[in-house]
Image 1 (tube, rainbow, N blue to C red):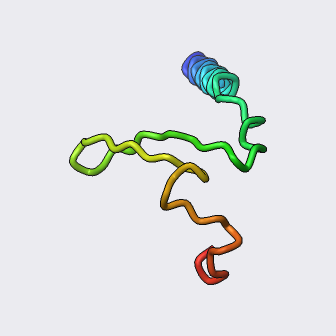
Image 2: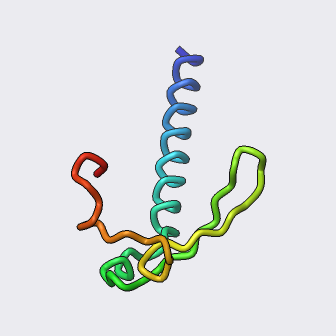
Length: 76
């Protein structure tokens, strides 16, 4: 019985820690309200399989940007 009680307390503690981790992670996410602006461009960093970082610009300021209306249905 004593071992079962310790296992239960450990499981509840881990669940609480995991829930707190998820809550903090969600709280620290950037706001999505800026994504409403269709003219906004977002700079991102992508790491390739060699460990090198590459900068990309997502949005209409990217010279290779294609509006979603011009993407064929089969590629959506």
